[in-house]
Amino acid sequence: MGYELYIDVFFLENFAMDFILLAIVRKMTGCYATYRRICLGALSGSFLTCLAVALPVPYAFVKLILFHGPANIAMIKIGLKTEGGKELARAWILLYISGFLVGGVFGFLRQYARAGSLFLALAAASYYAVSGIWTLVAYLGRQSRYRCRVVLQNGERSVTVQALIDTGNCLKDDITGKPVSIIDKNVIKKLWGENDIAGIRYISYHSIGKAEGVMPLVTLDGMYVCRKEKEWIEKPLAAICEGDMTADRYEMILNPDVLIGGIDYGNKSRSTASI
Image (cartoon, rainbow, N blue to C red; front, side, top):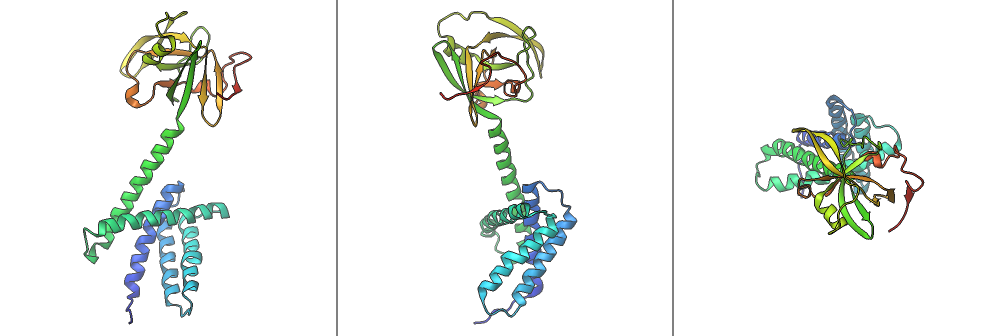
């Protein structure tokens, strides 16, 4: 049984898919290759693929090596201007990851549009779908970097909360100069219970939608910031938020200055410890 291959159609289909895959890898790696270079890379990849198909090679695995080796490497180097073996290997791996994603989306969409003339439309839809998936994954990754678990301690009581490390929180105490984090009022109730809060005072703040306001300010005995290591912070300052913070799935807005060592908390200010 023989097959008839239209090399021009095969070339164009490969060019379209290579262009889409290179564009997705460009987005994944954040490189600055122009679409003109990506077009050149896709043309070279499609040409080398057609050349490998046309070569009278008796063994199928040799053609397989040509497809996934020299053809794809040349396409990546021309289209993305990768430098160094590490960067090339990373782009090569991402090329196959994006290929699996595009193939899955393409196969899913193709069952609803079986006309061959819709190939380019389906390929474009697959590109936008995979790009959207990658943007979502990257966003979730950034979000996870700015969230951490914090164990607050006051006397014999301790409460574990989910905290947001907010680079926009520049709140500082005018008296001591220490950075101030913000805690949900329900967490404070758990820490103090029925006892009165000693040493409470107020701190002024500015926020979007509110020109100026004040919040109660308390001093905790300490807290563990749990990231790669558990970091002990002695006598941190916390402002009590009167609004509901739990709607965003965190109960504390952590001032980043607490973590970068810009304030001297004393002899026990920084130490790595385990709970």
